[in-house]
Image (cartoon, rainbow, N blue to C red; front, side, top):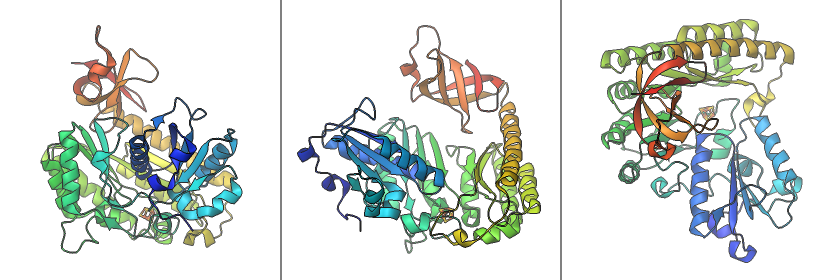
Length: 433
Ligand code: SF4
């Protein structure tokens, strides 16, 4: 049983005299948004971010249980913490899934909390953001889809949308606070409003959010079965909705899609892509950068099924693909399926897909050669302090040399034009114009 009190009340920090904290975040953007909220709660209680994990009085792990590897990393990291006076907390999806039972495996763990601990109705505009100019805004939590391989509906619960007026109030506060890029978040943003009887749905929300005037708006994640015509139209027409869309396909084989419980076919997905591309061409938005997730080696996936995935990837032409080898998650329907495909064979499929994906990422970046792109800069590049780093509208990483006499901070959070002179697989390079 998990403690139902809000996090700030459950951490008796004053008794433990914790002064500093460290947050380790695994998994998706929902966890990143939750981590920002935790940092805000802790700082409101007077804690400051420590210089490193080892020096922190309080360490919070925000966890993900979508893949087995994330479990292993968490266990390894928690077990290796050596200070007996450190307060160690585990939250997020593993906290929700395992609850207090985690303490039996990790004796140095002080607190466990689940995904509901932070409450649904918190004000995202009031949280401490990693970059003051970029904000994540959760608009819907949970998922009703129960894809057969996924644990999310069990750990994040059913879909719950944030009321329309509340979202718009938060957007207004973020805009007034100087936010340049806003990402609307949810496991399935397309079903926004379905649980709020009589309230506007996602397409209307997107139009209202865009009308706020925040310069860049993105949203993630979209489920292909719920991406409506109204959303496609809004996406294509709204200038400040960026021309990049993540549309998780998972497989190109109808047989595998059915076994995954995705509720769409390969043809439905390809039609959606064509309609999106056509709508964006017609509206003048131009080329969309499509990204996706693909699982290789789902139980029972044959060579033929995998070829169908390769063909779909060829047909769509993605800018980015997040590729995963199937990972069995206890508690899901797919965990009961058996498969005798040798791991080597699955790895070989995965490598073939990766090579294709890299080829496509390179081609997508090559298409920007010589173009002048508005880049939202984050500051100096991690590798070279004389180089600025930022993101293009299609979400590509762009580097540009720092002008003489300027400081990276002068550019942080600002949008400036860059002419692209070099296009590699993972980044673009150019000069400020
Ligand atoms: S849509 Fe499917 S994969 Fe995505 S969170 Fe919901 S159940 Fe999981």
